[in-house]
Image (cartoon, rainbow, N blue to C red; front, side, top):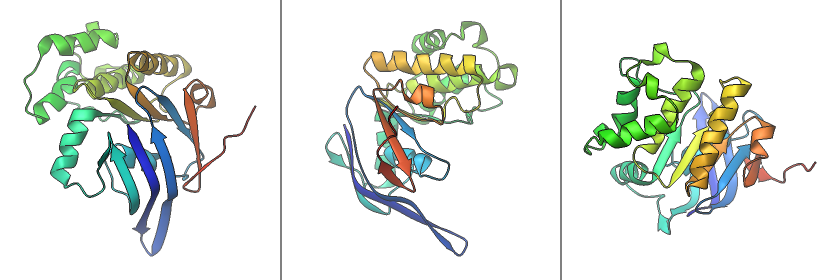
Length: 222
């Protein structure tokens, strides 16, 4: 489904050149649940942003369903993200002035697709927020806000969801709920790629990828 070959990413921070990724090779198959782990600064979020077409690599090649995406114009990348990719951010990124319903519907408005009320309500039910549909983010707990973010990522029927520390701001109970929700989506055929600092959750994925200093390294056993 997605294949990276010799992906590098460098950027400038003041007078410093940062080498965020240094020649990453990675294949992601349809229907896989992959966890990405590593210390802070190892390149996890950079890798996830490149996989999700939110950023471009400095060098290397990336294909999605056999199509090279490295040199696609921004408009084509936007269309690709809308059609195939859902993204879940650690900080939720909900719009404060919009209800749960309208936050979930937002990607449909951006893509100028018709608002399927039944579909949106079905997603709200799927994430267990039936009684919160008209609430605003400041009326929700952290776990509830992240569930809204999961539903929003699903509304365009993506083939793969990229989740950047989706449980990082949550307590143990809510972390388990979010992981279980992602696992259920994966069981339904959706590919899931999750960055996490939680080793217990990472170990429950189908496959783990460990980064250190911008490179994939063997995972510690036991």
